[in-house]
Image 1 (tube, rainbow, N blue to C red):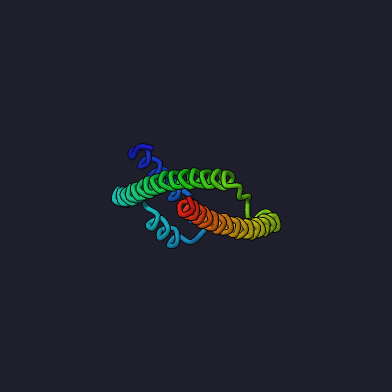
Image 2 (image 1 turned 30 degrees about the vertical axis):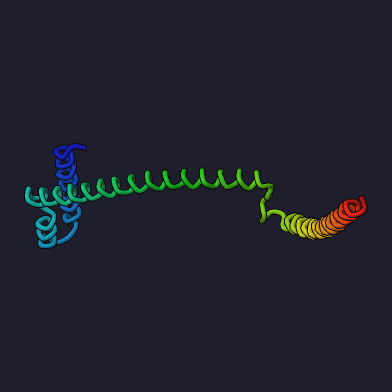
Amino acid sequence: MKVSALNTRLSLALGCLALVSGLAAENSSLSDSNLETAETRVTPETSLSQTDLLRKQLSLDRETQKTLTESLVVSNAEAELFRRKYSELQLRMEALGVEAVSKDRAKLEQRLLKAVSDLQLMNKEKSAYREQLLKVDRDDATFREEHAERRSAGADGG
C-alpha cells in the first residue's frame, strides 16, 4: 500500500473517530463534549507522526521478514544436507549387513553370538593347522637328516 493511500485512510479513520466522539458527547454535558472533541481532533502533525511511526514499523517488519526468510533458506539447506547424510548412513548400514539396531536388538545379539562362536572355531582350526604344520616341519627335518646320513653312509661304503 502506498504512503499517500495510508495517510488518506488514517485521516479518514481519525475523522470518523472524532465524529463518533462528537455524537457520543451530545448525550453528556457541554463541557465534557468540548473536552472529548479537543482530545480527538486530528491535526496534520499528528497524522504525520503516526504515518512516520507506521513507516518505521513497516520497515522493521520488512527487515524481520528478510531475516526470517534468510534463516529459513539456511535451515532448509541444512535439513537437506542432513537428509542426504542420513540416507548415506542407511545405505552403508545395509551394505554392511547391520540392520536397524534399535528395531531388533535380539536379532543383533544373535548375530554377535554367532560371530563370536565362529571366531572361536576359527581359532581352534588355526591351532590345529599350526600343529599340523609343525609336525610336517619336524618330519621334513627328520627326513633330511636321514637322507643326509644315508648319503654320507653310501659315500663312505662305496
